[in-house]
Length: 337
Image 1 (cartoon, rainbow, N blue to C red):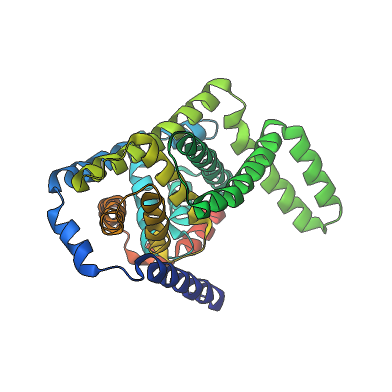
Image 2 (image 1 turned 90 degrees about the vertical axis):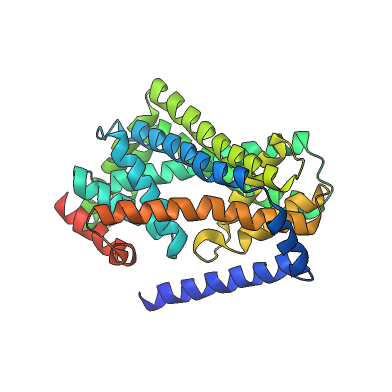
């Protein structure tokens, strides 16, 4: 790990620690432990299994977006998505994303730039979904705490602006080519050729948006996958008798994931709990109950897929070193493509 990566890691851990301290400041641990002991384990176990339905639909979305570049079996993509989540959950700087780009590029000979662009496209789709969930949640759920609305007012427009700009460029490849030509004119020869080559790879990857059928499927899969994850939240909430409805879980999921923009430790520990507890307490859920739920749902969406990702990675003959050296794997795949 380079000095810069170490610095980012330390900052992320510090941010998580601060949010954990704020989230649980003044809380009675005994009261939270009582809530955890009283929880019904059946909804928690169901939530652990049900969560993978959302992972599968995310894999379908990836397959749809990749179709313009290469046809890849859904089984392979499902395993790679689990590996991605595992890498993001245990190692800083979203190493899982780099790992899946490298592994798929190496196994299917897909150019790194095209593969990485599709990953970026997925994140933008996710951003649109989160903003939608927050808007829907605020329409149906009374949230009097101004901190929640302030966070949404700051984060949501940023996502909308970036996403709108991206789709304008994606849907007009000639505009992107014009921008690339302007850039390459002022660059030296070899660098100019590299940028031009990367630009064409990016335009090719964005071809998945220019087919109405594939675009529609990507949108449906994006909303479907996150709606399934929100239903996981709702299922687990039954273990604690929170008495919340589905729109509340959409709002909670949306705000928690928008807050992932904040740099923190792997798995967003601290940030996740803080915003989850914040949303639930502002609608009247007792803090010990909200805290017990936040800790539990975080483990439900973190632990099973992390274990599955490790298993799938091991089946490929790779271990922990593949996560820590994901960047090297990317370079190796780029050299081979």
